[in-house]
Image (cartoon, rainbow, N blue to C red; front, top):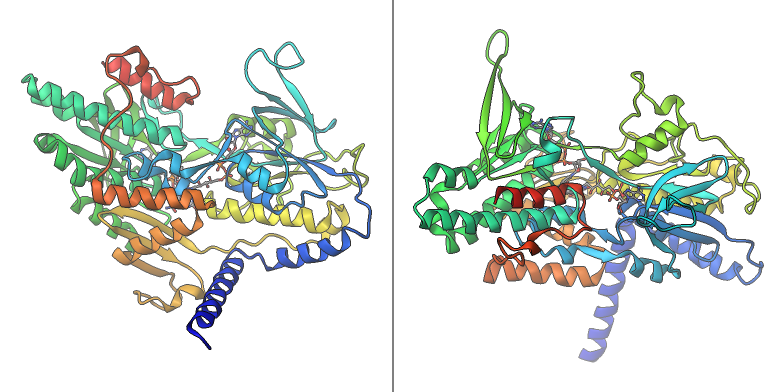
Length: 546
Ligand code: FAD
Ligand code: NAD
């Protein structure tokens, strides 16, 4: 065999093996057989009327569901205020410029075109009429056929995948003063805020201003020691060590990062060993980690925390005030107003004992929303006899954790089930229930360190600390390498992959970008009207403080 032939054979073998690994890891073998069978049968049977499917949302759950539906049999329409899919795991990196925010978003229209349609409506679902089977939505003020600008979109099947919103637990001041860490614009706001603060502190120092004021301004507080808060703290530590150190060395003695956590440990969802490793790693890098410290109040420039010291006897409670220059809220998630409204419309078991809607929509073993009345569809015979309203992802209460991993698998499952059963209620009733494969969880800790808690046979081959019947735990640089490569490989498009790899390279070789497009003291500093409440408030807050 010539060298050329060997090269061709090797390339083909490597490509096929990689494809097979990807298909296996994405659990897509059954999709291949479906597409092969339908490709042959589609010519034999004339196509019946398409089933109208409306999907609410453009997040993990919505997109993975869309990708499994068969466009030849389904007329799918998507409604969402967000016209793009957004890769949440890399959001913390955008807050310091490790990754650009545009590198982790991709237009939903790309996916729709690949799917063979262009039916996306940028709008917000405001309600659902379950009897008449239509969704009410608005695309902005003053539009629409009706006086109040509300449109109606009929459906045969409805997939609710509206995600969740930050939970503030009604703590006074949080809505008004904190920046949340949930959407793309939140990452942008944190980045602009820290750049603005650094320049401002520099100005104050040069004019001989009171050092206490500078210290307070350079105190950045992150509330919530879950993975979101931990990863943001890690990114801020990296930014300070690599970039502030280079461009603002004179500010280093004043700068502080504090992570505040209500419970006794950070990363509470992980193994206790990981929690303590994460805490010591963040502390070694310069951040202060305050556990057993619940934020109870927030003002324009300070937070009040309730500290519990758990010694012998009754726990001692103290209150402490911390001044801050920037505060980010990463205290968890709760149901969006639309999810609560839907729960109220359904009533029954969707409402808790105290009369309030529960944290999400209660769903059955196949993600059918519990308590929705059946009503026959005028266009799809058989539809209405069984469930036709589904909820997946963070807005569903299914027993799965509110993670992208779970939302993606749920969307895949639902899309595949509706496709394979052709919406037939009898076949749906016999379809196997959903089971989630939990591959574990990972988090970045800064300074090229990470933690990973992995589950399943696949990981048993890694040289890691492991005791019988325990999850596999990887810590340090190995976990960081795993974190980067896994999250990189899960990016959906090649365009985003190229952008992210370039961003990482750029940040490590040339440093992060420390320029902000906002000009201080300019009316242009006002945030664009498209920003959501929290981001807008954060920007307004920046202005107010000026
Ligand atoms: P989302 O992805 O939130 O999508 C909801 C969609 O619904 C959006 O398009 C939204 O615009 C739309 N919508 C909202 N309201 C309406 C309405 N009224 N009408 C129509 N549409 C509406 N999970 C992991 O597994 N690994 C991680 O590393 C990880 N990192 C994360 C990092 C951060 C900073 C955050 C915030 C979350 C992270 N998660 C991670 C969790 C993960 O992002 C969520 O669990 C996941 O996004 C849930 O997917 P979803 O489709 O249910 O909701
Ligand atoms: P979370 O619910 O996991 O953590 C929120 C933390 O905030 C909790 O530890 C809670 O005790 C604390 N908290 C709440 N109120 C507080 C108060 N008043 N004062 C101080 N602390 C308070 O929320 P999250 O980190 O935003 O994560 C949300 C979801 O997204 C989770 O399911 C998580 O697994 C997932 N996620 C995963 C990753 C990852 O795997 N790398 C990254 C980010 C998010």
